[in-house]
Image (cartoon, rainbow, N blue to C red; front, side):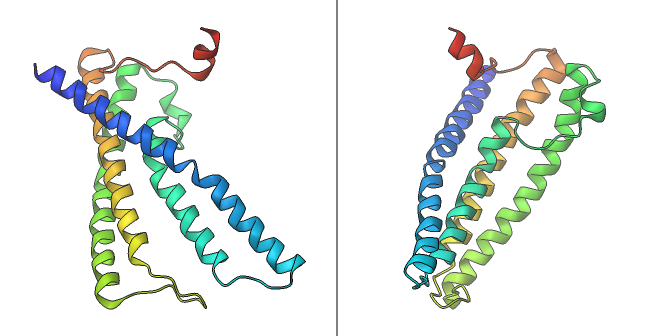
Length: 184
């Protein structure tokens, strides 16, 4: 019964992270449009906007931060392969336990600081120092949400690594790769 609850937690986290990761990917064309519009306005019309630079920074920040948990889920983050690829799956799981715990610790600090910055931005009406001067509170709220999302993904990965270190088998079934799905 407890293993079923743990599996459901991990599958729920994976579904949430995949949904947000896929959803935030739709901001890429928006970012491209904002940058292209600024280039067109600046060079073709000789009338640069005051909002495009700040908007593109915010959109890029949203994509990078909210996509971090999805990148973790897809194992797209950088890994030191010198030792990692030469050890057994159980030893890899032990390496993962340490690195995921360290990453969770760091992300808890980022979350705590982001919440503090969010509250500060609301209290003092912080704005970006630019001609347009947009509010900053939404950015810090997004950073807090992104760090919680990454903590959830790391905790799911940590549980999976612990299970694999103990049993030698993965807790969750491996998702088929895009190549495997295309072959079916």
